[in-house]
Length: 102
Image (cartoon, rainbow, N blue to C red; front, side, top):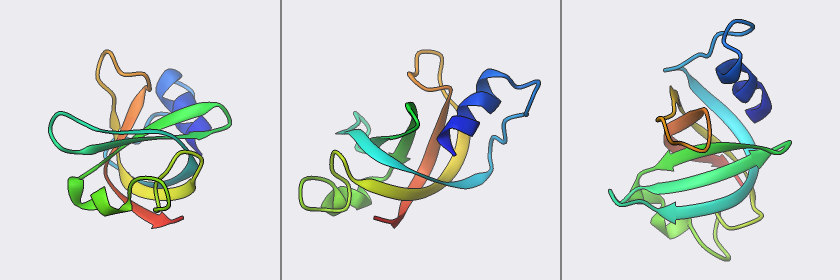
């Protein structure tokens, strides 16, 4: 779960983060945007914790109202877990994401 990932990254002594591992996470889409390098950044939330998922621009046709990824949609994604940058709003990012279910 997203909550468990937050705990692993914020308290690595109790449960070491599994950077590099391919994981599946589910949650509600709370934000999405096209980044400067033409990738989609999708934020999903579960139990008041957010996960930042990075997609290639191949998912452009799946983003927006009436599509797979929209505000309020509950989706499951698969991607590679990694440590977030210094100024990130989340302690980890999930890169190379793909939608599994919607």
